[in-house]
Length: 178
Image 1 (cartoon, one colour):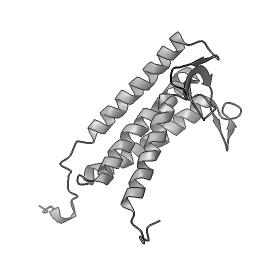
Image 2: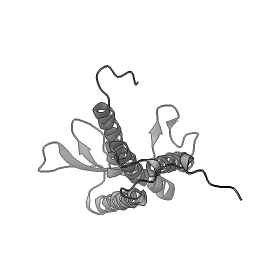
Image 3: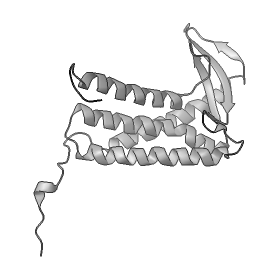
């Protein structure tokens, strides 16, 4: 019988379990898909509707996606295949983050991992909608940006901002890290 060497085991965190980030991500997907359903039911397609907020307007549109390398999705790469592959890559990244977050002690880096898991899962709403319906629904415009967006897009943007914020706060002047 061999003895386990506890010196090589990674410590478990005593903070929130990683599954809570998955739960929050699932809630974000439901909120994203729900707001798209509400927008589709109550907004006129293609018309701009002004709001009381000066930088926000409603504009219901849909798209089949596009990519700066592949061109318009659907021309030579079926849109549903593209989004399924993109969703699978996101899920692999989420699993990687979850495995690392489980091993980290409670820290700002672990909080970033947990936030990224939730945000990336929330952004999965676009991939899920595209695979199921063949299109992605956008329904609001935030000026100065000219294009319509949805909550899934914003979850991805917030995930990126979270990483940038952590990077700026964790680096010190004279630090050689890239």
